[in-house]
Length: 74
View 1: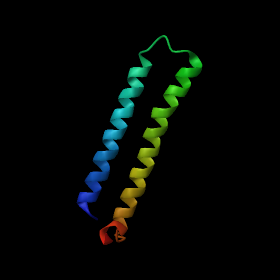
View 2 (view 1 turned 45 degrees about the horizontal axis):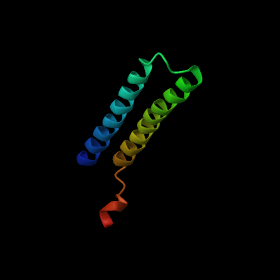
View 3 (view 1 turned 90 degrees about the vertical axis):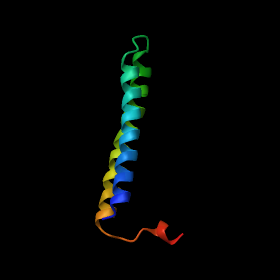
C-alpha cells in the first residue's frame, strides 16, 4: 500500500467532513429557518459527508489491492 496516497486520501476526506460538519452545526443554531428549508439545508452537508466517506473507503480498498495507479503514467 502506498502510504503517501493513503494519508492524502484520509486527510482530504477529513477536511471535507469537518468543513461540512461545521456548516451543519452552524445551520442547526439558526432558529429562523423554516422547516422545509431546514430539511434541504441539512441534506446537503450530510450527503456530502456520506459520499466523501464512501469515496474514502473505495480509495483505501484500491490502495490495498496494489493496483497500479493510472495517474502514474502521466
